[in-house]
Structure formats: structure tokens, C-alpha cells
Image 1 (cartoon, helix red, strand yellow):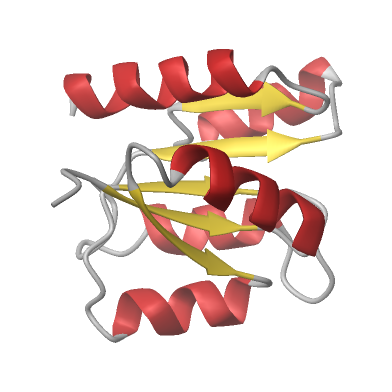
Image 2: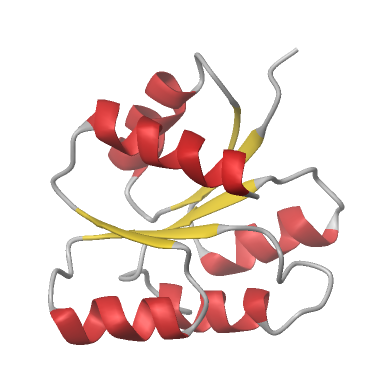
Length: 124
């Protein structure tokens, strides 16, 4: 049995598949293509140890999703990583202020990404 479950929220099916394939060797990986689907997964009580959230998604963006999750007592302690092509310092600062534990920009190294996820899970 894999020790931790990740929920990856990204509107790009390529990113979801890439992360699920690579992180699936060490973790159980759930995926959602948008914020509404992610909230449904959480509401169903799916065990989630860490969330990976894209910022730029149609409908509700990753900032709004992060604010909702961090504002909910049931989910606020789940570490959340923002994974995005937005590399501006204002976006990074906003994500971290909303409660993201880490902010990773695309393109990214899969090995480094996995290491940062493992480090976050050990701290939490």
C-alpha cells in the first residue's frame, strides 16, 4: 500500500497524466480537471494528503480554489502546492499568502518536484 494520496488539479490532461504516471510509483494519485471536480473529490471524503493545484483553469482558478480549501476547517491542514506557468513574484506571493505550502513553476523537473512533495509530506 502506498503511504500517501495526492490530488492533482490541472485542466491539462497532459500534466495530469505526466504527474500521475511519475508520482504514481511512490504515491496514490487522484486527479481532477477543474476546481469543482476537486471539491467533489474532497467532499466525498477521499483521503487526500496533499493537493497540487494549477492556477490557470477555466471557471474557478487555482487561487480561488486555494482560498476555499484553506478557508474550510475540514481541509485547511492539507498541504497544497501550486503548480503553474505563472512565474511572477506577485502570483507566487499571492499563492503563499493564501496558504500554499510551495509554489512550483512550469516547466519543472519531475525528480525535484517529487522530492519537494516528499519533503512537504514529511513536515506535515
